[in-house]
Length: 111
Image (cartoon, rainbow, N blue to C red; front, side, top):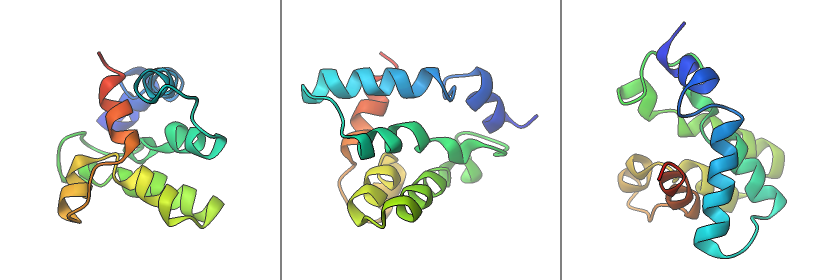
């Protein structure tokens, strides 16, 4: 089993626990519940780790694209696409953009 898949199933990116902690961090940081569309982003933002041989290598750095494509297909929203894609500081920096609100909730969730 690849490292990214292990992380989603059993590790820090666990597909049940991690979205819950990001949701809690969002509420703490922004003093409001995320919208239902933001909640979808919170749930799918790390799914791109599935099948990835690493977390911090080149394949792992590509993980935000998968969640961003999911929300694009669901909502056809550039705002939500960027919310997912730019939860990665790597992608935000490469596009000369600010990290998204999801980035900060994601990072705060592990504290």
